[in-house]
Length: 104
Image (cartoon, rainbow, N blue to C red; front, top):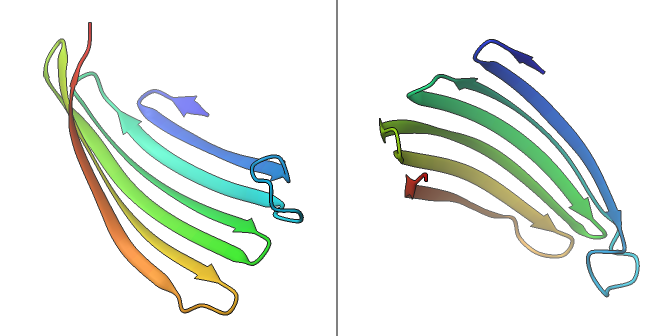
């Protein structure tokens, strides 16, 4: 959905066994996000939950961009993840990414 600079979206994906050779893997994911997009800058937030056989993953992300000029953008994202797998301890972490994009 879109209303002016506000963007709201979501998705549901059911990949079944098509993503891996492991029988019964049955991967599914649900996600949702919101963004505020202006000509020179924008910010966003999203969340996702994915399951596959004995695995579960949860992601929460925030990001944004700033246009330095008409053809150069500085972009950044930060994601917190929690991975769970039956019989193993929970794995958690943060991933950050920053990029300089040249748009022509």
